[in-house]
Each structure stands twice: as structure tokens, then as C-alpha cells.
Image (cartoon, rainbow over all chains, first blue to last red; front, side, top):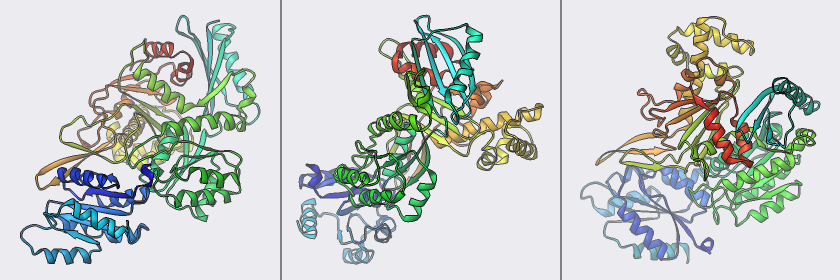
Length: 138
Length: 460
């Protein structure tokens, strides 16, 4: 039954309409045995939170590919806490900032914002699946 | 025996329509005062006498009724996230023809329980969680509802994984607890039909009796549904038609009353423009919304606030003071009718404002999003710009001399391009006030109902 599968919420945040990577991630996590609640593109923070509450998801996977990641992603952790989701796993990945910024800097910035894992361009979905399973103790 | 009598037990009037299903004609209509407090038959008999004066004595092979008497079917909807399952539960109840007293999200607290007890709903719809999703909140809310201190029928339409548990908890305090499919089985997937059906069956079993409507049972074969559900059914039939009788296609219905304005749409509402992404909860194909603050008498002041003096004054081509004066007059005396040209103009403008605002709240909206690659559009709700037919029903519209002027508020306006209202609809008027009746007739003779509506609901 699909109900026994762990649910994860997936979406591309903000005004970003990059749809291809979203489809690939959907496929990758579904194949890995998760039930993916895919919100698609152009997703406001609020919808990630609402979806996670209603479906009892164990992780929120946020993608941002158009360089405005910092603006769009800030405050999501606070919103989760405010809504009772508390320390639900938050992952983020993509082209999070514009230009050639040192990834270590980006990484620490997003960790500070409350994300549990931050991925740079070029990381394959398999790695994220492994991390997610580890973090969830699966 | 081809005569059928259709009855609408309204909050004020009991309206009856006699039809000949062979000739497919309305034999006559009449009305009496609704006498639900004493014996509902008194008012009905009064109406029947009035009818027979016009038609001569008739015998009926079938008598069907719908009711919005004694405040309609009062419901409270409970869900989890306000924009998701609570909204889905609300839409299911509206679609079943209910009057929504309150919508609650998240964990119910003691204050809200007190509030619900005071609202005195006749049915509570309890949703929450997608299937396999959140379990705690619906169970918490079931437990809280047992502390209401009232025996109210509860319909459980939430997370199927814990529905049996929720039912068990509720049965400790309530005698009638029914479970049905989840109103939102998956995230953003609306499934309100089973809940609608269940509400209707509970209405038939419990509410008809509680409202003293059963006293009419010896005469009436069945009080089959709440009146708004009958209108929704009629609208669906008129739009879709039947196997043997074609319908009119996508349409909207506007019903303005003294206290509320109801809007119905029968249309899928997919984007008609290019480069549009759909967002938010999917919309029901047959959708009903009710605006409690838009009405011509009891809600006149609320309408004045919602629409603003300027909007009404602009429609009427008068000053804001004229509008305000008239609004005060009709609110103080709800029986008041326009006495001169100025008042007539304000009355039309108020009707147009009711239509305009109610339709704006019903239809979807387009939002422009500026991305790095130029602008894109996001649509929330139904795009009804291609709807070609707007039907006006209800006392205010059909008794008006210029119903079309009132209905024009439903049309798209260049000043609010983001509202996806019908762009160039034609306007039809339910002159004989038969829509609710035809919804009832449609339960038994759908083809006849469609043909009769096409004959009697005419161009305004």
C-alpha cells in the first residue's frame, strides 16, 4: 500500500518555473520507494508547509534554479516551526545564488537558515536519496 | 395521470409548481406562507388552493419537495489546513446545498467547541488529512466534538487510515455517525461527490423530520433535497443535457436574495489563455458559492460596505448620498420597494453590485508573475471567460423589470481584467421561477426537465 511509504514534499520554490529537474527528482525519489507529493513549479513557501502538514510528510525537498534561492528560501524553517512541523527535514539544492560564489559560503548560509542539507549543482539524485534514507533512519 | 406537483418549502414562502409531463408545460404556480413552526401543511394547502383557483382541481401522480425552510440545512465544516481539507469540506457542504455556519481548521479548542454548540449546526462534516497523511488532528477533533454536549449527526470524510477510529470516538457521544470517502484523498485532489451524497442521505433521514417537514409526508412522496441542491441539479441538467436532449453547455446561475447571493457554475474552468499555470485546489465542475454579505434587504448595509458607495453610485449614475439614503431605507424596512426613478436606479445598481461581487468571488483570478524570463500567469480558480450563458433566478431577479441590467454585473470588465468572468454571455431569465422544481423533476424525468427549462427559461 502506498500508505506505508514515507512521504516527501517536492517543489521548485518562488517564481522559478524550471520544470525538467523537478520531473527527474520526482522520478528518482519515487523509484527509491518514497511517496512524492510533487507541488511542481512556482511554489510559495506556504504551500510546502501546508502540503507537509496535510500529508504528514517527513521531509521537504526544495529546489531553486534561477538564482533567487536565498530570498525565496529564507524563513521556511521559521514557518515550519510556526506551523507545528518543527524540525522536519529540509533539503535544498540547485543554482541557489547568482554568479560564481564559493559553495562553502552558500552552504553555511543555507545551514544557518535552517536547512538540514544543501546541494550544489552537479550532485546526482542518488546521493540525495542515500542522505535522505540515512537521515530518516531507513 | 401526467401531473406532477413540485414544492419548494422556502424560508418565507412555500412555492409550488404543477407540471404536465406529457405536454411538457407548466400548468400553474402558486405560493403560500411557509408554516414550519405550526404545521407545514397549512401553508402548503393555502398554496394548493391558490393553484386550483387558477388551474381547476388537479390530481397528481407524484409530489416532490425540496426545502430551505427553518434556516436551510445548517452545517459546520471541520478540516486541517484551512486552504486544503477545511476548504474541501466547505465545498462539499456547499455543493450539497447547505448553509455554512462555520469552517474550522487545525485542532479545535474549547472555545471553538462552545462556538459550534451555539451555532447549532444540523450536520457536522469532519475532514482532515490526506489518505495516509496526518492522523492526529482528525482524531483530536473527533474527541473534541464528543464534548459538544449535543447529539448532532457527524459525517467523517477524512484520512481513511484513521476514519474507523474517528467514527468509534464520535459514537461515544453521537447517535448518528457516518463515514464516507475522504474529501481530499491526495494532496490537491478534490473528491467531494461522496460527501455530498452522504450529506443528502443524512438530510433525508434526519433533518426532514427535525424540521417538521415529515408532516407533509402523507401528501408529499419525498422531500428529496435542500433547495440549493435542487437548483445546482437543474443547472447541471440544463448545461449537460441528457442522452436524448442536448444541453446549453457551460453556464452560470445567479440567484440574488434579500440576505444572500448564490452563484453556481457548471464548467471545467480550465485556462483559456496561453502561458497560464494552474495553482491551488482543483475546482468542482458543478460549483456553488454563497455570499452572506451580499443581498438586497437584510444584507443591504453589508453590501454597501463590500461594494462601496462609489461602485453602486457609478452603476446608477447617481451620487453616493442617494445610494446611502436608499440603503438605509430598505435596511430599516425590508418590505420597501422603490417609489421613484432615483430609487429604481439604486435598486438596479445594488442588484448589479451583488451580481458583480458574488461572481468575482466565484470565478478564478489571474495573477502576473515576473520571472527572470519575462512575465508568466498563474490562475487560481475557474476561468469562466468562455461561459456563454448566465441564468438569473430567484425573486429579486425574476420580479424585476430589467433583470438583464442586474445580470450584466456577471460579465467581464476591463477595469478588473484579472477576474476571469464571462466575456460575452447571453442572459436568460427563469421567468416562471421553475429551476428548483426542474431539479426535482430531473430526479425522475431528466429529459422532460431539460426540455422544459429550455422552453421556459428565456432570454432576458
